[in-house]
Every structure is written in structure tokens, then in C-alpha cells.
Image (cartoon, rainbow, N blue to C red; front, side, top):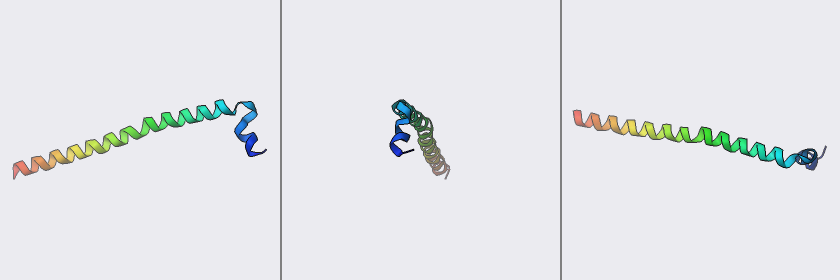
Amino acid sequence: MSVNEFFHMGGHGFYIWVSYGLALVLMVTAFIPPIFQERKLIKQITRRLRREQREQS
């Protein structure tokens, strides 16, 4: 089996690789935004705690 045959996959290669690409895009969009949202939330909580500590002092 050559590399060209592997990517062509018996004439179905285009559909297979497009579906793999879509699956990858969907997984990235499902996992990456929550990570950024978590970081943003942690920063907001940290700022709020610092502000409250300064107000109490």
C-alpha cells in the first residue's frame, strides 16, 4: 500500500478526511473555550479577593 492509496482510500478519501477534519474542529471548539473561560473566572475571583482584602485592612 502506497501513501497515495492510503489518502485516497478506495475513492472515499475526500469524505473520510473531511469528516476527520470536522470532528477535530468540533472537539477543539468543545474543549478550548472552557479552558479560557476558567482562566478568566480565576482571574476575576483573584481580583475580587484582593479587593476585599484591601477593603478590610
